[in-house]
Length: 185
Figure 1 (cartoon, one colour):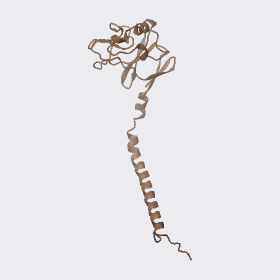
Figure 2 (figure 1 turned 90 degrees about the vertical axis):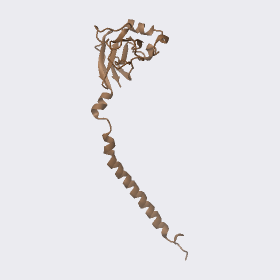
Figure 3 (figure 1 turned 90 degrees about the horizontal axis):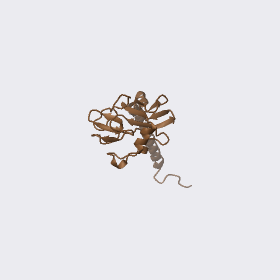
Figure 4 (figure 1 turned 60 degrees about the vertical axis):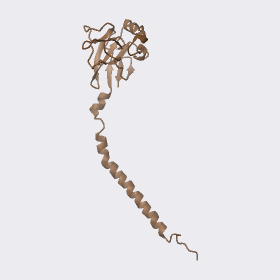
């Protein structure tokens, strides 16, 4: 009769059973640790009210050419201006090489919607809110916005033209849902 014992003297079956028990114990332990830690990780995610502020929808149907509105997004004022054909032409006619922060008008608006300018309404010098949203507000030497705190002037494309502001008013991420509705953020 042939010898059917394992070459290691029958200990191979015990070794593979021990390896299986180690792996099973490690797997159950990992699942337990993950189940224990998940509530702490989930707690660090933004709350629903914060996520709601991450993007907002804005109805533009009531804003006529030459008018502007201010909406709050992430705690910052966002200026949305419906530019007139004259304001668009003035913004396009600027020699970009003469600007502090060279940027053509086409890079600041969306193609096919160049009558709408959307910028964060915070002066890039010291964080003031420029004037120019209301019809009676001074708009500076370039017809855009004027920051009375330190004298920064912005044009109809939100570009810094005069004064201490080092950069243009930032353009937030936004997209058109329709011709009269945008999503900011």
